[in-house]
Amino acid sequence: MNNNVMFSLTYGLYVVTAREGSKDNGCITNTAAQVTATPNRISLTVNKANYTHDMILRTGEFNVSILSEKASFDTFKHFGFQSGRDVDKFADYPAAKRAANGIYYTTDGTNAWMSAKVVQSIDLGTHTMFIADVTDGEILTDDPSTTYSYYQSNIKPSPAAPKSSKTTWVCKICGYVYEGEELPADFICPLCKHGAADFEKVVAS
Ligand code: FE
Picture (cartoon, rainbow, N blue to C red):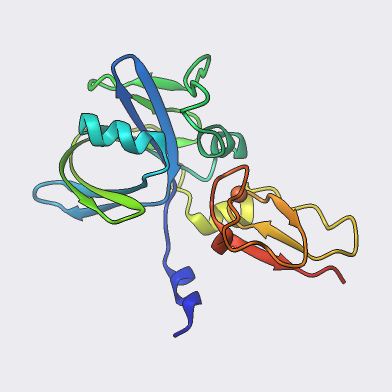
């Protein structure tokens, strides 16, 4: 089997937000999809390492802000490359409003948002898949939704050329550069927390 077949699937990118007590949090995912129209239901799969995952599991509610092609890399860094366990991502974050369910949605580089209520949680090992009813939502702009490949080609900064003649490994998610001939199999990107499978080997010429 050619494992690269997986790269031919297309994905959008989303800020998924939750609120538990007085704690707000959000993270970036590429895994929201409509599963049925009647009822209007989506699936959302979240890595268990994300703090937002635990909040959704406990509260059964979340919002999905759909990122457009106007989304800035700063939005990805803000919600994707730091953990809600360490920082309050909504402290002094101006580009967010609360929906009727009390949970924030983002407004910067966001073309629409929706609120959802979990009806089923499926344990998938590293991730949980939430099946949820869409309960609210609004269109904010008519900018096209970004895809993961649009993010890769147009939003994420191109990694700087290797300074030395060394082999490097570049994180395909965030652009972090690891210097070394071999990348340890258990390596976790210090910026975006993705694993070794998301790194690409770059051999200096
Ligand atoms: Fe990374």
